[in-house]
Image (cartoon, rainbow, N blue to C red; front, side):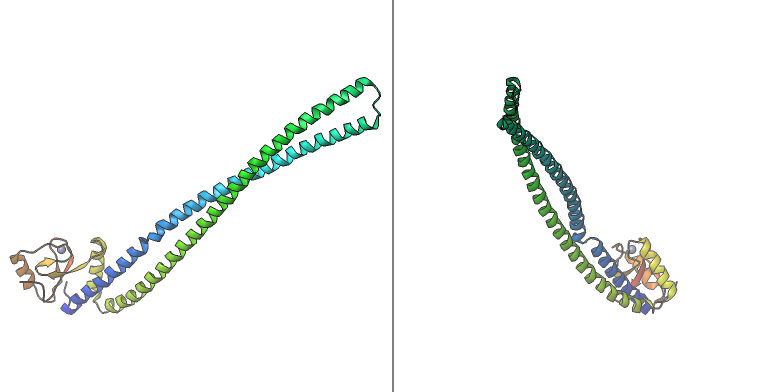
Length: 247
Ligand SMILES: [Zn+2]
């Protein structure tokens, strides 16, 4: 393949531009915000589950309390009814009176036990409420952390993308003047060779693979016609000769 030395030099400009675009793409992929967002998302998901569980626990305890308070209320009502019957003097037989007084005594004990249960449930409800409050605060904080990291990522994206747009316009300007066959070879080699398709021959070295040429090989390369497209024997990349290629 042949190409004017000026077009071969332009290939080096294109390579520099493409490497810059690769760097920008790499920077975009490896922003620290990606890991921060992943972690913040995981925290947020875990905390959401914990809040849901704590709220369910609080709901259960609230229902448990309502039931226990209802039980106390029933006993109170029954005691009040019994007391009313005793006070009214309507209970005539001593046996009935004794039974009723006995029941009033049992009910007082039962009410006291049930009130202890109510207190115990109230304590548990208080800790359940505290847990809901704490977890909700942590969840809110994790939402803030997540949103901040997302905002920083978006800002970094915007900056990188603006740079990339500018570099892509430069690339377009350079690429359009390079002969199609040379450009095609460069693109193919760039894909095969980790992003570098064209390298300068600089001070006897291929700048693509860093191999240093023996004097005899260097002389053979220099002896090629100026418009010959030379490839590195070692890495296969297009080797662009410049004034600093070395003797
Ligand atoms: Zn090489």
